[in-house]
Image (cartoon, rainbow, N blue to C red; front, side, top):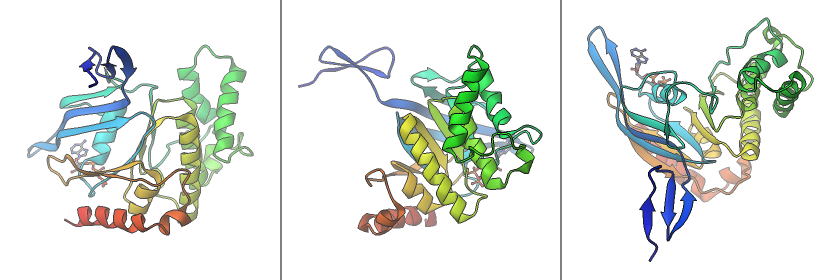
Length: 276
Ligand SMILES: Nc1ncnc2c1ncn2[C@@H]1O[C@H](COP(=O)(O)OP(=O)(O)OP(=O)(O)O)[C@@H](O)[C@H]1O
């Protein structure tokens, strides 16, 4: 029988004397969030426990106002925790850091800067000792990946919403995060652009082997992208209500997924959860 012992770092497991690194990238432990309001404290999240594995793609769904953005912004280190803890590779987070890249619904680019300069802003901070040319090459690589190779020198103010979101994706990947946090990144886009950017996202995520956590209101998007769909209960005191494993092989095509019997089973599971 295998003898498992716990190392003092919980991501390290010693099994029969051999040391392994566990696959947990993100650990949310008894997480709590309270917002003070004029009518007293409002407990948004309570007893929220979730572990997300290295290289996993997790989508988060739940009713509007249940606390999805609150949870994501706490993982990003942008919103203080009221109780419990969040660790990245067993290190408790203390604020924002380059190990976590964030993509919001609206990318908030500097409109007077070019696409290249917008992506360079973060890269300069994260790789201060790299040569200018090296930094530019990183930015150009990711801008090309998102289909903007002809637009390096266009001002952000001249870009369509879809193009701006492409810059947002390039900017997040260019800082080489361990974890990518996405808050409804395609919510404002038309369905064609949305599909294109989902494909771009999955292609880069798969190549870079990073961990992705994405909030979406779209059940089909949640299934298409995820290894697991995490369902949050409605607030107050929201927590994880259920988790659905999505067992489709990768790479995935929309057509093959829609034709798969399990697709309707998954869809029904998620819709039943949201309707009850
Ligand atoms: N700074 C704040 N102060 C007080 N209450 C807040 C604050 N930010 C969010 N809330 C409240 O906390 C709850 C959760 O908000 P949050 O934005 O996290 O929900 P959400 O699930 O992401 O919603 P949506 O799906 O509509 O984006 C809501 O009731 C919201 O009004």
